[in-house]
Amino acid sequence: MPNTKETLVTSFALFSLFFGAGNLILPPLLGFQSGSWWWLVALGFAVSAVLVPILGIFAHAKLQGTIYDFGKKVSPKFSLVYSILIYAISISLPSPRTAAVTHEIAVQPFFNTSALVTSIIYFSLVFIFVINRSKLLDVLGKGLTPAIILILVMIIGVSVFAMQFNFGETSMVSPFSAGILEGYQTFDAIGAIVVGGVIIVSINLKSKASYKDKRTLVRNAAWLAGLSLFVIYIGLILTGALNHNNFESSITRIELLSGISKITLGNSANIFLSILVSLACFTTAVGIVTGTSDFIKDRLPNSRHAYLLTAIMGCLLGIVMGQFNVAYIITVAFPVLMFIYPITIILILLNVVPEKWASPMVFKAVVITTFIFSVPDFFGSLGDLAPNKNIFSWIPLSEYQVGWVLPAMATFVISNVIEKK
Image (cartoon, rainbow, N blue to C red; front, side, top):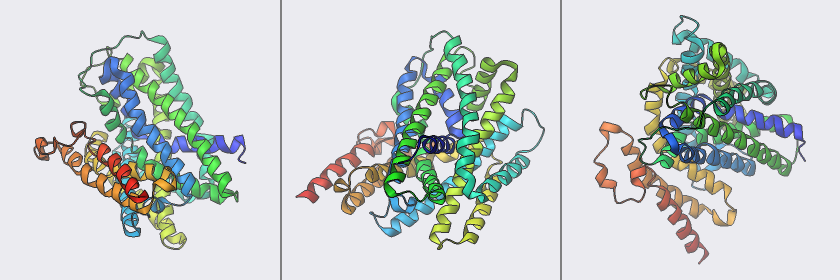
């Protein structure tokens, strides 16, 4: 059985791999805009940014393989295409976004340097961590995560205990679904199947424990990491809601986070916030590039050269994309997420349920249905380029951009009934 120290180190490592740029800058503005409905927004955010990602880690604990194993029951070709697509998205958007956030919050206020210089230094350090693969779990779990949590607790604690509990009005039509869709932007469901693989490989490099012991270790660590994420998100959303009178309604995500830090931490805010942002973003970038490199190495019979080359390419792409500002990267990412997230969520859920309810036929039927009914949500995310929304108004929940949910659930039930009979 795994001991307490192993569980805590693995849990801290999981937390740091999850908690990156989006996890830090998204919740405060969500709370700021939600007013007295902050708790309902927080629940929606927790569904897509905590519950689904932790279920993804549970699925990894069960499979103990790579991202490729998530879609094999649909077909090997589907699984390969899906895996490549996930890693391409991960190193093209969330990984560079961590560098952009670091530059805008942690570097720009102190140094008159370009985003290119920041990206080069940032991803050079990421590369050093990635090539020291065997030490990754201990460095993240023992060194970086406690510092991240400590600074977050300071910011949230001062806000919650020093401010009066009064909230502004909100213009949100559907706070719960707004929270779910904003949770997409954390990339954590995608992150779960990427960094979950990193955790499994890291445990295998350090331990010869049995399948059962590794499954217990990963599950226990996932529970602790999930609880920590939930508490931090609730705190950040509540902090944003409590500060509704202190800022203009047009404030950006980064401006709000910086402003809240100055109110709570005083003159030392910039230093503490810079450390927090740098650590939170850096650990996520390391996890993404490591996960991508692990996957390519696994597909090319344990080639060390493939691992090294993928790490180099991932860091170079991060340097190129990391020069764009955060708002632009978030805008570009949204349609991509509306396309890939529903399929990712369904694959996670199907890999968690008992085998008797998740046969290859069920996998195929549910994934195909989810893909078909997520297309209207994808079109709806294109803004001015979107077709007339009335075309898809007959789909239940389509007005909340989650029109795939009920058809996927119905297909899961029907396909299981058909198979049993």
